[in-house]
Image 1 (cartoon, rainbow, N blue to C red):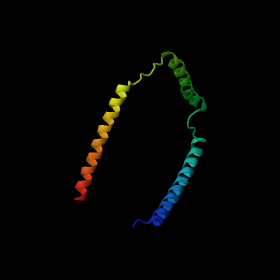
Image 2 (cartoon, rainbow, N blue to C red):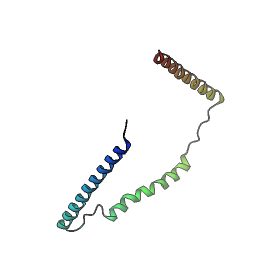
Image 3 (cartoon, rainbow, N blue to C red):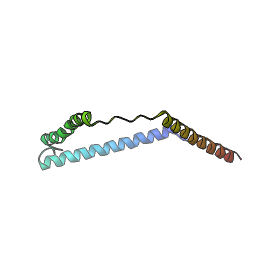
Image 4 (cartoon, rainbow, N blue to C red):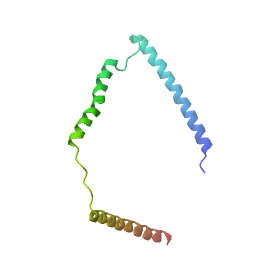
Length: 108
């Protein structure tokens, strides 16, 4: 039988050990950063803005083009819709038949 309490306790111990390891890494990083000459910056703010600006402009470009060149969606005729429904019913009938034969085989 599966022991949930034991698993939970094991996971908590694992989390605590990983957290201790992360704290050690944080201390090592801060020590190395002080030797290098300050905190290491991930990316300058100006560079981030240059990256984000085209992403912000993109939806407005798409909206302006979309209104001019949007194509209307085609409608399915009544006959086409009936054909789709009938085909789907046939597919499901095959699935049900396969399930019945599988159930009969497993029951024997």
